[in-house]
Image (cartoon, rainbow, N blue to C red; front, top):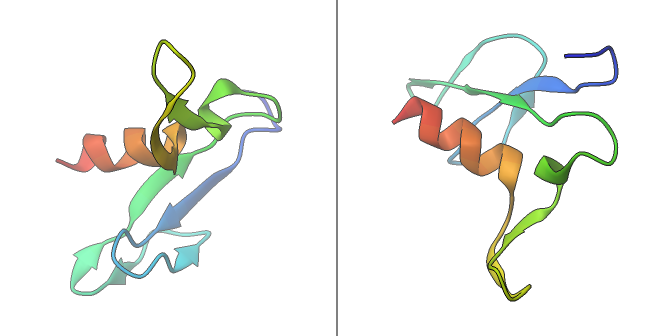
Length: 68
């Protein structure tokens, strides 16, 4: 990870963002690593044909899956 990576915590329910670990809606907030500018994780997920599979960026989907 380089110094341009963005790390923050987000509530998956209301999308409140914090720089430090916190609780929101009686649950721990999810740690997100967005990567550096230009990282493919900053873009929405597409299928093999270029159609959007999700409007959420890949970093968000990765963070949510880690918590499950």
